[in-house]
Amino acid sequence: MVNREIKVSNNQKKDLSIFFDPKSIAIIGSLRDPWSGGRALSNNLYDWGYQGKVYFVNPSYKEVDGVEIYPTIKSIPKTVDLAIVITPASTVPDIVRDCAEVGIKNVIIMSDGFAERDEGGENLQKEIINITKRTGIQIIGPNTAGIANGVTGLVISQYPLGSKIKRGCMAFASQTGVISATGFPYGDLGYGVSKICDFGNKCEVDESDLLEYLADDPETKVIAMEIEGIRDGRRFFDTAKRVTREKPILIFKPGRTKESSNTLMSHTGSLAGDQNVYKCAFKQAGIIQVNSFRELLEIAKAFSYQPLPKGNRLGIITITGAGGIIAIDTAVECGLALAKLSMRTNEKLFKIHPTLTGNPSDIGQMAGMGIPPYKEVIEAILNDENVDCLLCTIWSFLPAELYIQALNEAIIPKNKPIIFWVYGGSLENTNQICFELENNRYPVYSDIEIAIKTFGAMYQYMKIRTRFK
Image 1 (cartoon, one colour):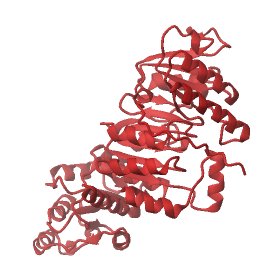
Image 2 (spheres, one colour; image 1 turned 180 degrees about the vertical axis):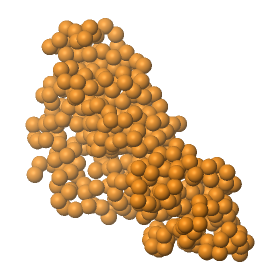
Image 3 (spheres, one colour; image 1 turned 120 degrees about the vertical axis):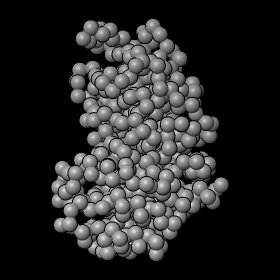
Image 4 (cartoon, one colour; image 1 turned 45 degrees about the horizontal axis):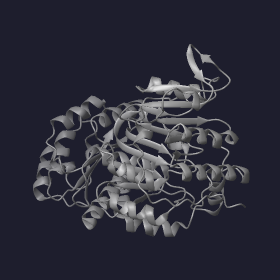
């Protein structure tokens, strides 16, 4: 097998701000199909709020729907901030040269057929790299699914979006389109996004460049990355070590098996690398490694919604005995400890109902006795000096408004995180509860083990910050 991973060394810090906040964009590619290519891309820009100027380049048209189409990038009368290329791979090097000649410094290449494909594609990618070295032009891609800026509404994708991106402080970066704005329903799930970037084959801009940019991005509070391979390990881990002093970095690293490592080569041209080496390096840099793509997304949201715990002592409110046991097992495996409630707290719980004393506090035993006293129990446990964080089980048969009211009325310490696990037989009610709680900045999970792992990651990062500072 040909080693198609192309090594490029460039330790100079790049200014990626134009990629995420361009004042003018040129789209170079097909305009025929409204479901893909340049036309779908332009629809995304207009539909989701882009306010800048958009130019279209395609020698096959003079105008489309009354909009002037330019034959080449050189024929556009004004300088463009960002060019987006969606053309056959063989045409891309000449287009990049033209961009450099007219002063365009930033290019996103969405076309595929480069180093991930075959030796011919590898040679085309090397040709583009040589152009960047001569001209200083910055490139995201090729073979990228695009980028997004949740703050401005900028969405660069050649496929239609299913749901609007909600502004927030989570940044998602990857070497795959599965994390792109069209690959994942951020809006439907209520994820608050600052930036999204699929850097594709990393022809020029790579994971270290993006990490440096996100470190200085005031809109980003937590960084979640799917990493298939790292171009410059020393630079990446030195950068990560600086960033984790201020912002958590979560990484999911696929390619654990020989079979998946081979497939990575045909995906983005990356080598998977030794998993044990990555694991040790991540730990030294203060990076939190997660075990699945779902964990990457789900754990990140808690960092954006809740404070870090001061310690590892976990309080649990459950409505099912088995749920409490699963939570305890997962907590211990994640480095958490079951909080020992104070005598005063147990007295408060006993007055509410005798079955509520202890940790876990089983509110489910009050089923059939009216609306469970969530407000009182949450308030009692979270205000216990022996509790650093709280997992609360939500029964999905009750309306979401009941839980919002209880939380609004409860006296909850601002320095103690609370996470919810939703349990019950109604998917419709579960989804509504999740939506309402997360709109009020409470992380909600349908998987109790991921909920507990989230606390483990938050506690781990608290220790990382303490160690580095």
